[in-house]
Length: 158
Picture 1 (cartoon, rainbow, N blue to C red):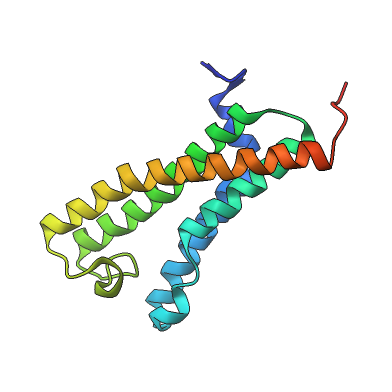
Picture 2 (cartoon, rainbow, N blue to C red):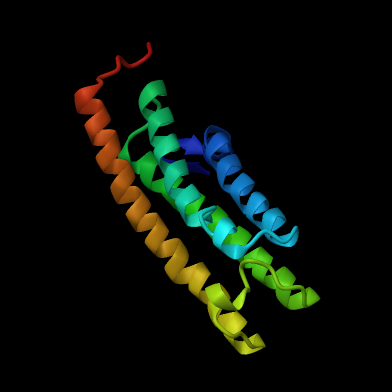
């Protein structure tokens, strides 16, 4: 199956550095919380911010390699948002199943939770989280790609 002229695997390979950045922030945030760091210190390590930074990294790679266009930015934004929010959902599910609270289920970030509210929290990440991150990331990414193509034109590879 081709998506914008490339296979899904090709898209994943091109986004490996960006996907790795999101995953690294997620792991770092979980580990720092588990080792007892204060939440105010762990809070700046945001997966949402890592998704935005990863979209910018993907746009830079698209521009420098001249290997795509605005549709690739949209698809990259969607993949990165889905990856980030699936990781968050995995952390919430782990917390619910084991009873071990983590940064993603802490009351100061999630509010007081019951099993029913955890389900709402998960659904929020899978719908609003992915949707808004995709739209805002794509808008930001397309604007940056447009500016890069005007200000720093690159010759296409032959």
